[in-house]
Amino acid sequence: MSAILTVPKNLTEQRVMHIRIEDIRPNPHQPRIFFQPEELRALSDSIRQNGILQPLTVRQCGDYYELIAGERRLRAARIAGLRCVPCIVMEINDRNSAILALVENIQRQDLNYFEEAAALEKLITYYGMTQEDAAVQLGRAQSTVANKLRLLRLTEKEKNYILENQLTERHARALLKIANPEERMAVLEKITKLGLNVEKTEQFIEEKLNHAREQENFRKRSVLFRDVRLFTNTIQKAVETMQAAGISAESQKMQFSDYIEYRIRIPLNQKN
Image (cartoon, rainbow, N blue to C red):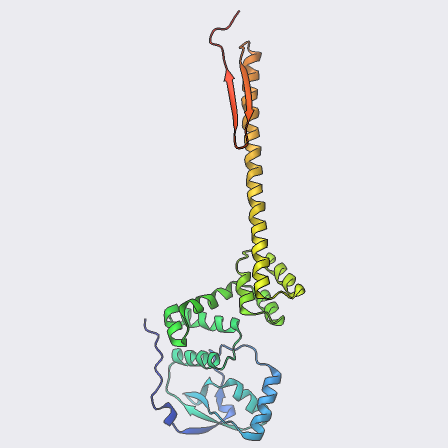
């Protein structure tokens, strides 16, 4: 299924309309979840002084308009007390509206990496894109898209903690090597307490994983040792049983660095 976004060639030639703010509804596919209050206040102050320099993009849906791109400007305009805002009206479907909203936010770097990952997942699952389609549409490498999507494996608690402590996307990706959420959270708290950068975080996690692998190998060796001891005891018990029955059986146990050797001698001719 093709996922190429078609934007009217005459978009820049379309007439700018002034539309009442109350007639504009938010984009239900808006990928950005959190808007910094300080940024909105600063933008609203600028709008009061200079107006809105770049029109919003909307599409008509019945008797109202749905925002495609420019929600931050719309919110700031509302704070500034504007009644109308300049808009370009496009004829576009739901799918392409969602793509445009994501593209605009990415190009403006308005999204944090978790919001971007969630928006990418929505494009892929809800609108039937492949990772290749999304990569082409957004001008990204497919590996970049795949790495973004992997971030969604983290829990909401972990995502919030990472953002609150201003850790990077590479910090978040390094955590994915740890499968257990409780262990990941403990590592998160440790690296923020120590103030570890990305390189030291990756090294810390690798050392933790190596230690866990060593412990698992030791556990497996311990289980094997218990099993071997059970088998050797069984052999010794069998020899003792034969001896109790009057059979002159003999056993010799020789232990080497990597194996145990048993020699058992059972006479064929027993003396009465």
